[in-house]
Image (cartoon, rainbow, N blue to C red; front, side):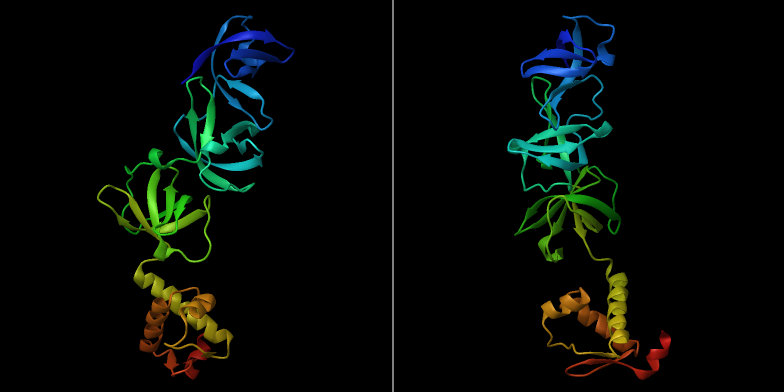
Length: 274
């Protein structure tokens, strides 16, 4: 909501608008043909130095979500970089998770009744489901919330709501992290459920290749079996135990390996494949 403010005074290169939050600085070029007490339509915001600024051509739509980098943090809030090397403020009351300097986050522009513009990480209600994505499409987005019982909520394209369930997550993930994923399911309401894994037959090929690579690099032997712990399997091969067993089944069917009780061995006639 652009609001009219009164020009209070001029300096050499700047003008100052009277607002309820104090005098707002505006570049003189935007009001060069105006005089004191003239009205200027603008929005106002705080920059990185807590200077109140006015903009007549603010480049962002209120309510829109953008991926912006955090460039400074002080006792009042966080400052994010916007266009033209400017910065804009997020009060701590609008922050929903810990923000780390120089990381990029999905944040939205908000505005109060005084035409004061600020940022928020409370974006869930601004995300939509009117996308054209289908099952197995590749998507990317940033995590905007993590629920340890449910999973990671992701803003796909900074527009669409999606969920990566907890069973899909491995390792440490944080808000702001960019996720590349596959659409696992499109719900009736349009919400996306994502997977970090490829379609089963493609993923199985990748998993089989990982095991073969390990065998080639370790003299054709891998001391893993059905009794191996899931943690050890994931640590070495970056896959679940069930995926590991499926990949072994494919390699065995292809006559690439011999499976023993305590180990897996690459067949001797397979060494010449590399």
